[in-house]
Amino acid sequence: MTASTFAPRTLFAEDALLPTGWARNVLLSWDQNGRLTEVLTDVDAQSGEAGEAEGAIRAAGPVIPGMPNLHSHAFQRAFGGLTEFRGQAQDSFWSWRKLMYGFANRMTPEALEAIATWLYLEMLEAGYTSVCEFHYVHHDAGGRPYADDATLSLALLRAARKAGIAMTLLPVLYQTSGFGGKPPREDQARFIRSTDSMLSLLQQLAPATHAQGAVLGLAPHSLRAVPPDSLQAAVAGLHAMLPQAPVHIHIAEQTQEVDDCLAWCGRRPVQWLMEHAPVDARWCLIHATHMTPDEYARAARSGAVAGICPTTEANLGDGIFDMPLWLKNGGRWGVGSDSHATVNAAEELLMLEYSQRLHLRQRNVLGGGLQPQVATSMTLQAVAGGAQASGRVAPGEVAGLVVGRQADFVVLDAEHVALAGLPADSAHAGHVFASHRTSAIADVWVGGCQRVSQSRHSGHEVAKHAFIQARSQLLQSA
Image (cartoon, rainbow, N blue to C red; front, side, top):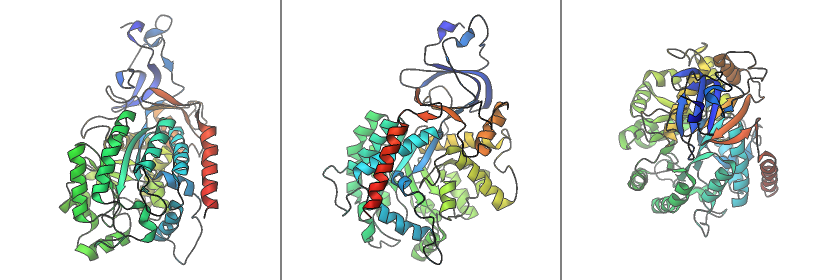
């Protein structure tokens, strides 16, 4: 093999995290469509003047696969820090939701695009390379459809395109305020759609998402917000249109939700879903915090991905997902930043591991087997589950830095104080567990295009100022 074998679209890394684990002297090559065409290990970078990696970009440190963010409500990024006060005797998810609804009802298309653009830049700078946008603000402030019914969805697609992040757009079906078909509340008017209206929106969005290389799916909001007949019809309609499209649903996030579901039908939410919906590997169960051992087993066996959002679940007081039990049943999982109290892929992994330690009073809970390094083990699992939930790999296919997959990767900064002088696996652990809110990310690539260089996106300043202005205007309109 000679240096002329490699096209200019190549990157050489002394260390890279492949699906099989850490590898040395790795050369990544990709085509004009941003798909990996070669992933070579033990490449000779020293022979001759430049060796086999001649002409390749040299990574500034260890390379890890880009992290999919499998759950995002973009508009809530501008809401961060605005609810961290005690407003009643016992604050909860439900008191937070009331405040959030008030904020959502002031959102404009222009503000949403500015907020989402900044958020998606933040995600890229923080190690995410794709996002699943769980989008439920559809109409104007009075609940009336815009002249173009896809106005707000298209604003999110434009934001993703400007940032350069890969998008899975999940328009949300929302119809009722509670189990048993309770009528929607006045402050939910912007979210409400009939099933036919949702399927029409999906048909309208399909060409735009395809043109952008985005994935289109559906998010029935929750069992309390979508009656059984609507759930069945919407999922069937989606898969008649797009057979492999992902389906995401909030499920069993709060104990009150479990109690209300039991009162409605005598079944717990996950139990009911497994018995009445065609749950399979195209589904992502967001949160799924409160399950019995039987529910863990049945949900894991379905092939669905558990969408864990550790910092949001901590922020809202949701509870702790039993990850060891999920893994014991062969479950797949990924992480999301949800309400964006934190926008940092490494911090989501840290919070996930630490929540398990607090719950079990053990250490290094999610390491073991072939991958004793916790950061390595969690990253590979979250990349695999997140790619499946994003609709970017089929169940059973390999995700990450492998031929045929999109060239999405993160280059860590080998000179960062938490990483410097350490072997790759320990440096990666330093990134996840010891970087102390300072970025240990040097560069980020999505689809073979560099989006972040020296820790900063080229659009950082413009997007930041637009975000601040949009947030100020929304607060002034309160």
